[in-house]
Length: 143
Image (cartoon, rainbow, N blue to C red; front, top):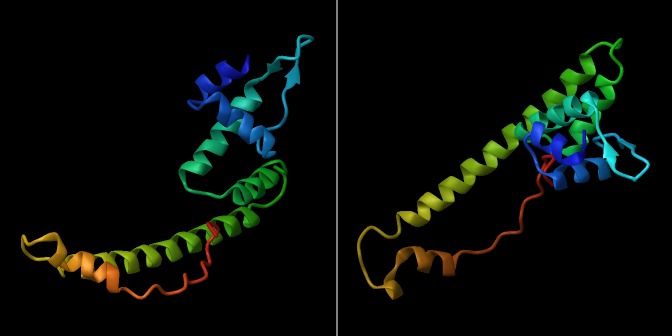
């Protein structure tokens, strides 16, 4: 099948297919004498796997690791569990970050309880007065 057909079957764009090829997540396809890409069922399966991992917010590094492990079917699955445990830890950290963000937003929102002139808006005053703290180092795969 051609790249457009692969993209349609995998419910993504042609650009996504090319990007995953460039990133080394999707193996390079065979080429026709006219230099068109030709994909097979293995490409469809791998692309769906990649898209499912991305739907779980996995990084390309995590997907690379899972694909390397998947390509060794006789090995044990302990390393796969480790990748997932690390990803779960990243999600937990992100949840903590989002909870803190929600608290900050809520505190700002509480500063404006009634209709008043914009120049008296507690939210805008709070934003203007906020001390910008250095961004904490993130300990997630998102950087």
